[in-house]
Length: 91
Image (cartoon, rainbow, N blue to C red):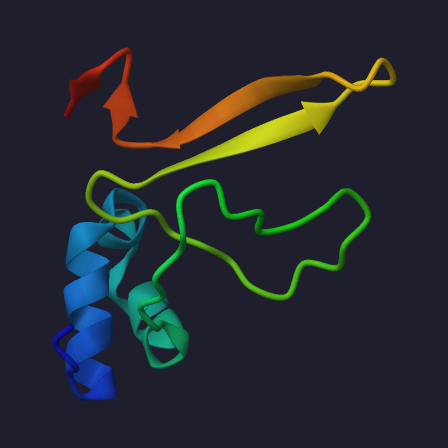
């Protein structure tokens, strides 16, 4: 893994995220000092229902996040996908 100085790392991350790249430069400048790259494991649970939200995640590159809703019958429903891949086609 390549480690970058905090300001270079945040610029690099913002270029890889469509949402961050779309921000007005002044807004991105406010967020940049707080941005850090994290490695997530496949199928890693970020939050359980009722958890306090302590971090915000901006998927970069081909990363996908999904919202899973647990049902009363014990099954789950995938309610939303967040990322750049849709229907097997990467944009």
